Length: 128
Image (cartoon, rainbow, N blue to C red; front, top):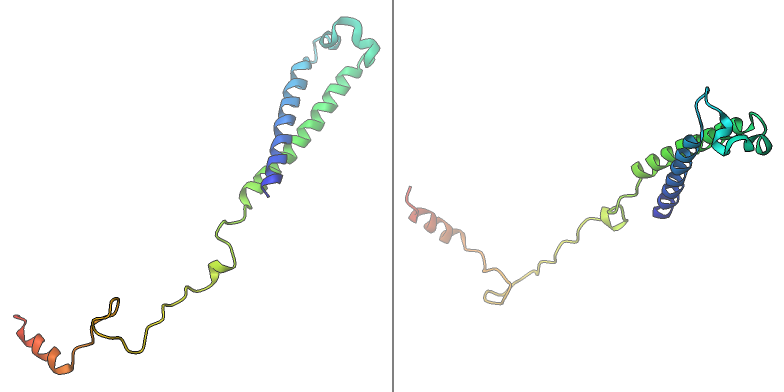
């Protein structure tokens, strides 16, 4: 997916630079179209109005490509796969095994539970 993002981004930037160049070559409706190619030389290259049609059609084509790459970049930006979307992420965490009988005094084990009589005598010693 990262490769497609890079490819579309490169095409997008090159298209934007092409549009900038073509727009700067064009003149307004009242200006002389042949001035963009050095005076009267445009008459032999594109014809009298050929350069205007060529530049406007090329600009329209690049604008359409720019629009499509903009939509493609928006799609790729919003539909990125999640980094934590693996198979193991949905599995429950394993529970540690609890030994049936633990020795009192062994490291890492809890002391044996107090009997009911001992709990009652300790509860009576606590002041209220």
